[in-house]
Image 1 (cartoon, each protein chain N blue to C red):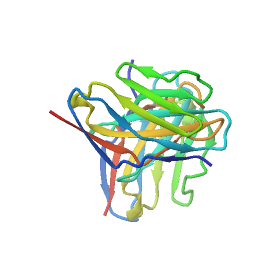
Image 2: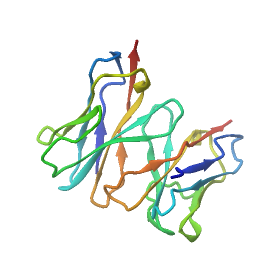
Image 3: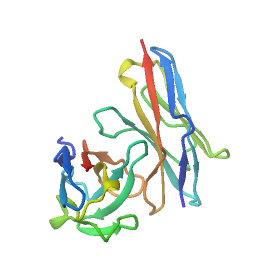
Image 4: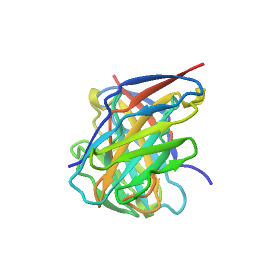
Length: 114
Length: 113
């Protein structure tokens, strides 16, 4: 079974530029998550989709971050414009259901904003 | 609101010995789950073990066991017979009801040969 795929693995941009990350979850998983992991901290949920609907985006900085999950499969996370404090690893995860289900994580995208 | 506290920034253990990684949690949910994930230097989060708040027995998965003490709000991870490949960051997390999964700051485990 293929795992969660993410691209790119690494990205370096200048502040005020825009960037997009892509995630392909495990086939059949209804729930998709985007997490932000700042160095030295645990992952923090940015947004959770169930199929193509948003379940929780309470911690998503909506003035600059956006995410979509078209057709309930792949998802993209965009940052525009980027700030220095956005430097982090962005992890995508998926699960069969929601609460209590094991989440399977992708390898992450390491973003550096200069 | 949920909160996870991992008080050990770093831990060292000799190969083949057992090690306990501490985790305390705070939640207002009556029903919740506790998770442990491993994050090697490659960056991917790997699920290790899950404990439900109403599970009467401590969860075990191979060399991993979760020492769940509900009254103390403690969910420590015990790794038996440590291996060099166990060197990684370990994150404790909690999720209740329809709440999001919240992680602690993690513990860096180093296994010495």
